[in-house]
Length: 490
Image 1 (cartoon, rainbow, N blue to C red):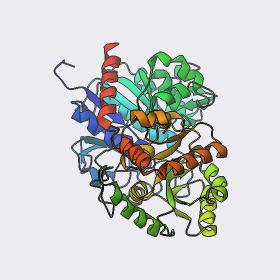
Image 2 (cartoon, rainbow, N blue to C red; image 1 turned 120 degrees about the vertical axis):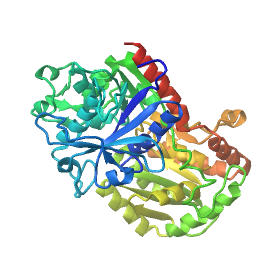
Image 3 (tube, rainbow, N blue to C red; image 1 turned 90 degrees about the vertical axis):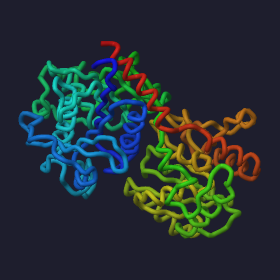
Image 4 (cartoon, rainbow, N blue to C red; image 1 turned 30 degrees about the vertical axis):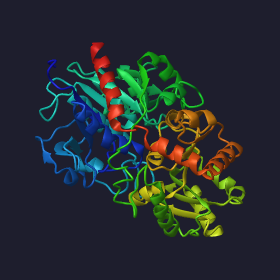
């Protein structure tokens, strides 16, 4: 690479907003590459060609068929751009692997696809090929930016390619998801037997895509500084803490950003009433619309607490369920939008049936409704037991909806607790509690309710949050500096 050439980064991911989304990884994949391009990087995206992806990107084939894995099916690469953006996108087309009903990882009944090792082993292999001499689709990457287990294997595959030219940066979005498969898959993934060992891809007798990335990547990034520290401990490392700790000299934490164009209350097309820091009284119109949408009593004296979340143990949704009888003795209403564990879905549905007008629940994911929850709620609740980064607390602050969060991961790094000292110095943006307990959660909610009764205090907390810079441009600058450090080592 000549010093005058732009840095070439391939962002390899299993989901990309707005093409396909199951969680926060898609938000990152859809926003960070465009931010990198604004910083002068030739950033491009690689993802599987799930149904509809090629049409959405306006994709055209870049060449003939190829066989990325020696014993795998044929594939083809299509090139287009992100909808509404000029960021180049490569879609890996292999109908036998990716053109299916259901989601990216599971079938319509919610069961993992049995050939996920092959599906994401091929995606990883193609990412690695973009970093080999000559590249693919007439383009050679300097850095392969892999994300989570679905593309983590690319670091190991590239390590055994003599024609490798690129370096690999792996971002860990959630270390609990590891992509562990039977040992027999090793040969199907174009990896030599010597890679299967303690210092390789082996993890308790299985092939681990995530461990492959942690061991072979040139640098590891956690999605917040606190999460980078946490995943080196047994409490948060999900069994991988020793692997991570052994590479702490190649580990960083970079807090995710948010798409400040899509999440802007002053021009959000999903809101019945737009508003800004100087027109926060207009927020009340969204509040009334939210209460109506969720079938709540339209009572301005009751505080509306919102949640948009996956319904899992990780997110602490059970803590809120247990608290409802006590919490609703206060003038509080709860709205929840989310999906996940079927047992939690059923419990939340029952809560809405048993407490009509006070608890409103929509099971599923609805992007416009998520925007309305952020804008219409008075406060936003995130009682996560662990949270690598989290995005909703940032959306909430941008929308003048102070978050109530547990002090963990990215929540700890992005929300400043409201205290006399932080009110005085202008940094207070929310309400933070420490232990994953009903007692501490309830105390934090009570603190928020008390603060809301003081208009001056509440307005200060709202405006502090709205003025905080959570743009991807900030995060992109950190990643750009990191890429250059990684390349300078070699």
